[in-house]
Length: 125
Image 1: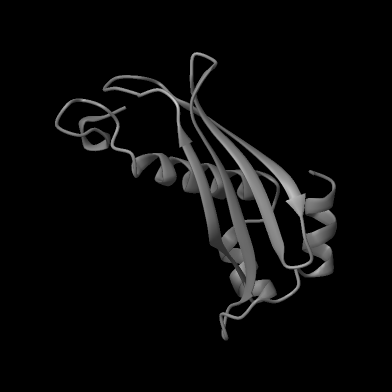
Image 2 (image 1 turned 120 degrees about the vertical axis):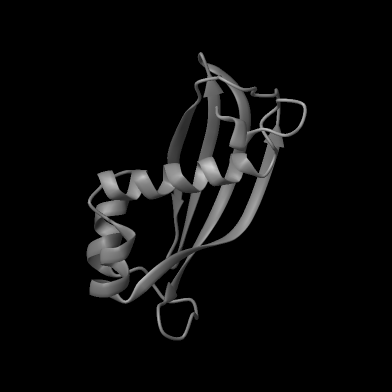
């Protein structure tokens, strides 16, 4: 962790955990071959956060090295549910359930996940 991630007490600022999770979901999608920029331009869809349930269990501090574990828990017709944990040396510090909606890029209205994308995701649940 860097100074920019911490508050005045040297503890990681609570909202930063959500940024860490966002980055990890982006990387998770990218490594599965579903880069978000390609989904937007080729499939005309965006994955947007619709719900967050978070638990702060232990603090992270300056100079900690953290890992973010990302798991796709549920694949709906137009939604994804992720479970994420931020860990230090295998110990869970933060956990969240993140609900993602699939929306049409132009209208920003919910839309079904395209079949090819859905098939790729289904193999990962």
